[in-house]
Image (cartoon, rainbow, N blue to C red; front, top):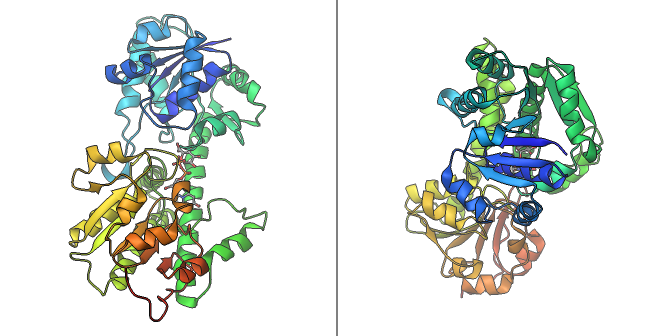
Length: 444
Ligand code: UGA
């Protein structure tokens, strides 16, 4: 049992802290937001993450998980403090480090015994050294501390599973003993551990996210070529993925990547390279292709709806940036909904869990209670997020609700053959064809 403090109760901090508590440690979750801490104390999670609420309650009950807004309290007995605060995109894509700075300063102001400072936030290469400088420059009397970089590789929506079953744990530090101690914390996970220097660990994180984003943009570019040449990108991805050197994951063509990580991290890495006088052509192309992937929806809907979207009723299925989360940051769905509204389309939206967040950020978007209500009298439906709920819909019922049976499937969740049989005008990403409505079909 170790005493651990975790600064920041966003997706990363909450899942990290709760999982460490579940592994038997005593964890204090710290946030400067009184509102978030009050919610946690009431037994409510400020975010939607499958399984997290139950795990929080279980560990609070067992006396292993505590919450506070007070650094002095969190650091009183801590041997480790994890920095898990946000690093949003600043000007020019540069990561904004104001919250990391504030955390480092507060740690320096409140630590009173040796401490291992573990950085989990995604930060530009060199930030670990910068955090060490902030802390040592602010300490009133010399005290031993070490900074270890332990980047985050969990995905939203499967954060607990990913934390408990990591492909690897990366630890970077100038001090081998400190890194060993952080490795000990992870031993119950029986994961492979990679030990490096601080900057290399920070770079492993960026390079990993940038590579996954590259895979997505790559398959989206192939999808566009497939459409022109009449090939099926879904089969292409299966055929490619069987090659062990390529692997099957992250080859799902669609409307491009979103969320709080890939868009921000690829831009931040591009920015770091440019600042060093480099010309990161591949990273810039990944960003361009991703932007272009959103256009698929606009271009296809325009074509399917007689060249003009003004006044057309369009239902957007799925608003979260991906399934199993209520996170709408950089969500392709919302970006596309805004583009559609700009050209005069009448847009409605539905999402199984993200609607409360959307109501706050996009008050102009009409929200409805279920997929069938969304389909009511629309000229077209656009699938933006591949929620399981959408895969199991009663499609004839859905069609009967629509003014025109047009579906643009931006996540390739339906079978083109079946959609054709059911009489939909169906278009999917990288699958070549528009399936015409059977002759003689009358719109409901
Ligand atoms: C990503 C990484 O996968 C994690 O390893 C990392 O820890 C995390 O960022 C982070 O840096 O904190 P996350 O953003 O939660 O995780 O979600 P992903 O499942 O990676 O999906 C990111 C985006 O790519 C989503 O918009 C998703 O729809 C899209 N995507 C993913 C595709 O368009 N195609 C695919 O084949 C896979």
